[in-house]
Image (tube, rainbow, N blue to C red):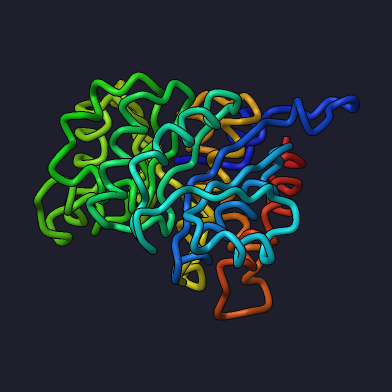
Length: 288
């Protein structure tokens, strides 16, 4: 079971002379028309979790909206065949941008068209920086999970039970019935760090090691909470954490931020969880 001292010891220290170029560069590929909130929340969480530079690539139809929403993130457009469907050329643009970043966060709100799924699979097959695979990027792997064991990059998958059930062609009930065993089995088979969200969230490593997270609360059951988690984990990888440790710390901080934000509230918005991440990280670091 994860605890504050374990996470505090793993978190990267920030020297006094750190600057934005040494605090980690994150590439987020997310959002589409009608789902710009997912991209905004993921990008905001990257910034609040300590990443030095965050760039968002998003389909052109939603770029203007996100440029207004996000002050601290560089927002650039991806080509679309039509609104909601990425054009084939988007894959090359993503790969070129990822080559100069420390991590790629892929999937929140990106869309589920076959065009977009093909772009996602092309990117995953060629990217060489660590990648956090979430939401619609997981959907793109339904029927294609054989790709996971051969991908060249280190990978962290962050499914909720419904997404993992679709990947495995199982029912949600069967995933929930034995979430630890299934998470460990998938991490081994796919040679990935697997974060199975829920109560408790399970972080499984490719070698079969697994951790359970005790932080968080029921007020975090709100749309966008998972997008925030993806951003936190990506930011920690960008700051130099090994993917397995980044997943552990990201899950713990995400829940801790939810606990901080829920102190005086019953219901939370996902953006409030992202806003609480810096305080949660500070409190966890103080536990040493």
